[in-house]
Each structure stands twice: as C-alpha cells, then as structure tokens.
Length: 124
Image (cartoon, rainbow, N blue to C red; front, side, top):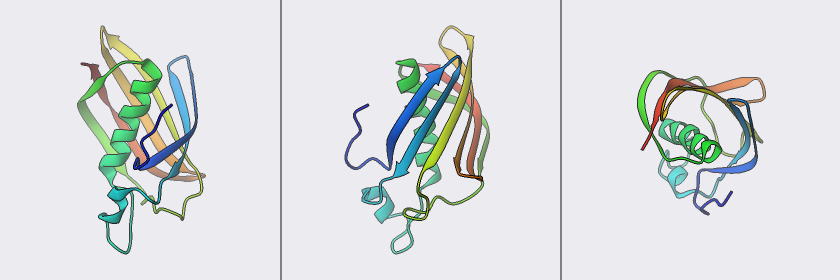
C-alpha cells in the first residue's frame, strides 16, 4: 500500500478476511499535522484516528466511502508520538445493503484502548 510521506500513520501490516481487518501501525513523528497538534506536546488528533478507520476500510474493500453516521466515537487514551511503539487497528464490518457497511473499530496500544468507533460508511 502506497502511503504519503506526511501521513500520520505508517501501515506495517494489513490482514483482511471474513468481515474483519487488522492493521499494525506506527505513528509518523515527522508528520506536519503533529507539529500543530500541539506544538511542543504533540498528540494524534482524533480526526486522524477516524480517518484511519475510513482509509483502512477503503483499502480493504477497494471502494471509496464516506461516513454516514457515527453514534459512538470514544477517545479513550491519547496517542503520543514516540511513546507508542506499535498500534493495532481492528475493524469488523458487515454489509447492510448495497453499498453501506456497519463498522466497529478499535485502536489500541498493547492493552491500552485509545479509540473506539461504531458507525455506518456508505459507498460514494
């Protein structure tokens, strides 16, 4: 998978089977986004975690998606560049109808849950 040099996350591995995807990631400490969020004390913005779910789902399904609803988004622990060696993104999804997917996802660092998501993405 081709990733831009300024991406917040670097994907080390992505495995997909039977409505599930799991990715192993590193935070790109050189990302320009982190320089502004927050200067001198960077943390990964919550919007980047949501974007990560969308990007990995699009890669897994090989389709373009947009978020329709997100009844549950919980930011449980900050993702601090350099403090987390590897992160794991777990996604499970199911087709609701033609072009829409119910999605549950979680981002964690070993035993620490950083982000939980539940929502619906639709094909664009």
